[in-house]
Image 1: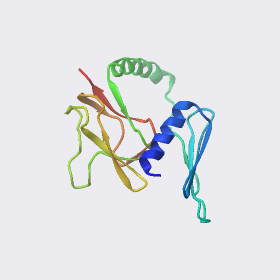
Image 2 (image 1 turned 180 degrees about the vertical axis):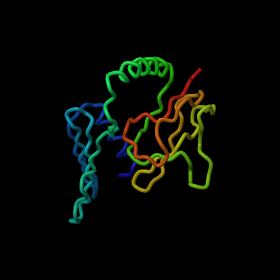
Image 3 (image 1 turned 30 degrees about the horizontal axis):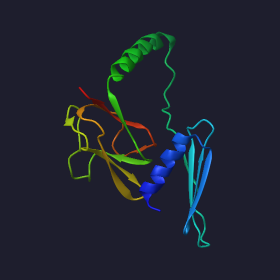
Amino acid sequence: MDLKEIQNLIKFVAKSGASEVKLETGDVKITIRTGSDEKETIVQQVPMGGQMPQMPAQVQPQQPHAPAPSQEESAPQQKESKSAAEDDSKYITVKSPIIGTFYRKPSPDKPTFVEVGDSVKEGDVLCVIEAMKLFNEIESEVSGKIVKVLVDDASPVEFDQPLFLVDPS
């Protein structure tokens, strides 16, 4: 079973609402469990040849740790976040189809795929995500202009995590 098939299976399980799926094909056994709050996904792949099973990869969303703002600071921030949310609603969000490490460049000595302000068309490569030593090109699903890059280069990303904001107009 290749990485693409596993990724598609994870997507299917996440969308279906199933809490656990077990699949055995040939010499591979895969168990996918989703937490009750659907923010936790556990994937376990076990070779069937009597070898030691791999530890399950437990995925949890990253939560930024920031000090709580004082009461004086919180009111303006709430107004700013509401206007930012309204502004972002007209943009299309490009999300990560897989779990892995986000890279803006094809290699360290090459230029970035896209910058803020660049125009992209459907099928253009926006970034790569490394998962299990495989580099997966993430292509734009829409044509438009890159408004914002939401992830830092070489950062871990989760499944369905927003990566880019694209203005389709």
